[in-house]
Image (cartoon, rainbow, N blue to C red; front, side):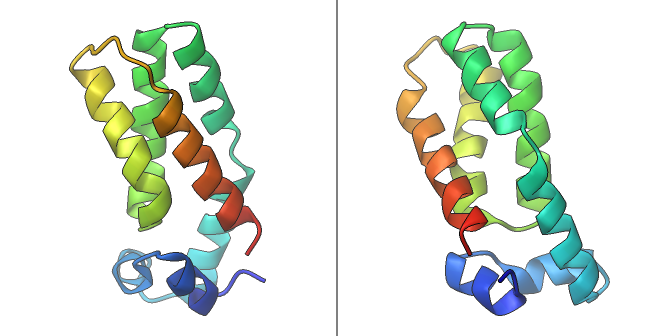
Length: 111
């Protein structure tokens, strides 16, 4: 079950996120639940496979904002790296980073 305690164990900086959510735990948990319903991580994976780096940057940047604002650190870290590589227009193999992001997303979903 998704609670602030389980999110802390996952590695989220819950205290930081709660400040953004005016210390409203229920609101924060609702936002995290909504983030877990979001399908853009799969879209990002597809865009990276297709080397559509311009679209991938937009998707990654959106995900970076969402995950970072919710202080979901283990999930946001690989997405931040992807975003910055795409910002620099780096043509590289993104498979390890997207795999890490998907793994963290899965861990978060299984809390």
